[in-house]
Length: 180
Image (cartoon, rainbow, N blue to C red; front, side):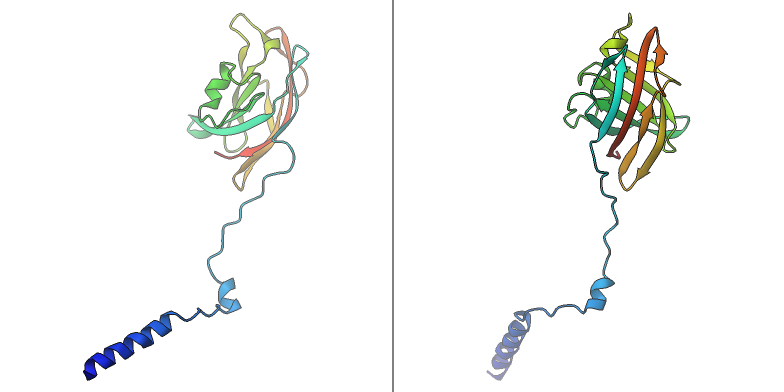
């Protein structure tokens, strides 16, 4: 019986110890606990703003997303997809944009160091025998490109009006998007 009383007493002591409110950790220990990684806040303002015209016809690009693309010269490439219509989270927005699924569009392909390795432009003012989608090289550039804290930002520009297969193209877009 003595043994049973000891077990009951030990159980009561254990229950009492477990039901106590935990004490707050000292402030010094709280500061040294695991830190959360710093994430840069998204830049203020619209995701994309600026000018995009084809033969003087303005287009308003309101959406911009970034997606992994095919490597170029052994470097990873990001496709930055600018569109007039919502892309709805489409992981293949870069391809769908070329077929006009999101209205006017630009798909700019960029290496991690900010080098533009190619671009495709969709604009009704650039209508050619092949349609309103044109692949470009050397016409557009990226300036002030940054990839920091999970965000991409910069300026995509044609540096004024450029001749594209007998049509005038003008691009001057400032952007920020979540990195892929």
